Length: 281
Image (cartoon, rainbow, N blue to C red):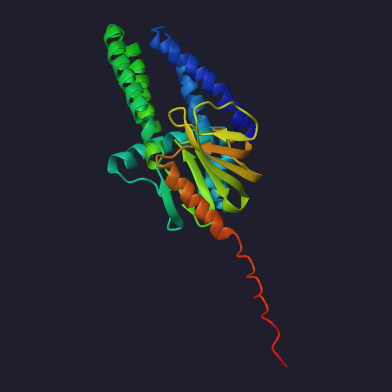
């Protein structure tokens, strides 16, 4: 049953895209074809809804049931888009995500990319206005392109909002490295072998390295004695042993991280006192 639902979903997606292109282009689609496509979509939604309820009755949580029904890449893409929209709300309300009570310090890292992202958003707005003027004679095409253009503007602002509201976090036992809405890597402090402050503007892609540049720059390099997993956007594993990241105040992050690592180092045994001269008989 699950395979049948998956096959139906993969068949319906390109079919729906083809129908959408035909309708936007003004090509008449036979009513029986449209009715069949709508019936197939309704059948797929009904089957997935019943399967979801059946999994919930078996005791699975909502998250577990969704993971059982929907491929992980699709779930991660949807979660990423929702995270960007939520970041826009946090950005407008000036309420950054600073984790829970276990957070010792937060280190913002979006300042150096603000001008670039605002400029990119402005270009997208200009493009939206221009396309609206050019496509005014084709209302259907104009509506589709307008939706895509507005979403593009929101997407660009959401990327910056996610970086602005999701700073790097330091807890008593881990460094949580984040960027935009797709990177959130927890690095246990016990795995950090070395940390150094260095400004780099060029980064070669290498296996086992993660470069989180902001404005093409990283300011802190963290080396690990054991790799941590930094999953890609669609969920594939990516073990890394070197992380390069940026912070608005790299000296403060370096000092805090160095102090946290020093606190983890077990205290050395105090040396025995030097014996004094033997007492006289």
